[in-house]
Amino acid sequence: MESGGRPCLKDSPLRLKSAYAGRNPGAGRLAYGYHATYGLSVTISRCISRCTNIYGPYHPEKLIPLFVTNALEDKPLPVYGTGRNTRDWIHVDDHCAALDRLLEAKGIEGEVFNVGASEEHSVNEIGAAVLKILGKSKSLLKPVEDRPGHVLRHAVDWSKIRTRLKWTPSRSLADGLKETVAWYRENDWWWRPVKEGAFQDYYAVQYRGLA
Image (cartoon, rainbow, N blue to C red; front, top):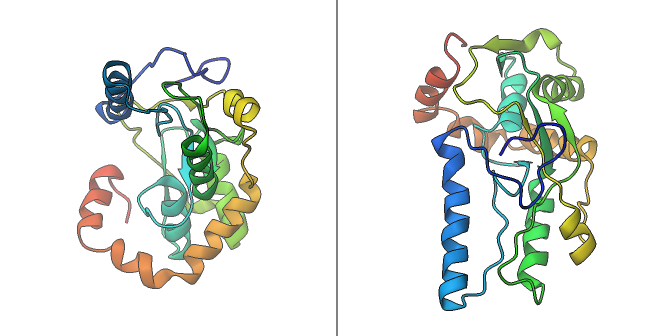
């Protein structure tokens, strides 16, 4: 889902630009079909279409973990295109807390809820913030060929979950980013082996020309 002048509403049209982005809305509609046909208790909040970008420990191929671990190894931070593409960023713990709230709520069956954090920042800004925390030079930011179907902006209007269910995220991006950087710094025993082997083949395809 891509937003133009304002964050996407829960009923905004889905303007999908890749097959990957199409999977989750499709799953959401399938789940709703079971609700409508069989009365299955369903509440929809999907990553990609209904939630903003999630960050935190693990998942080293995603942007923030990749930036952090590359910076820790003094490797280039690959930036697609201009790096001005923006996302709203939510910590994984906050996203899980939102899902818990939705699972426990009564009387919302069949409804759709967006989940966000109102922390919209560009890839360039995220890279600069990671490097500042680690005391590394911005020269590590390296542009690479833009990927096909790259969405310029992704943000959602999450006022419904805030007003209806009284949920708000607990972390600012500034605090969550510091926690995330600290986790990767303290747990290289986990991510270094993960970034070897098959990951290197993926990396070579995604970020051509970077070591």
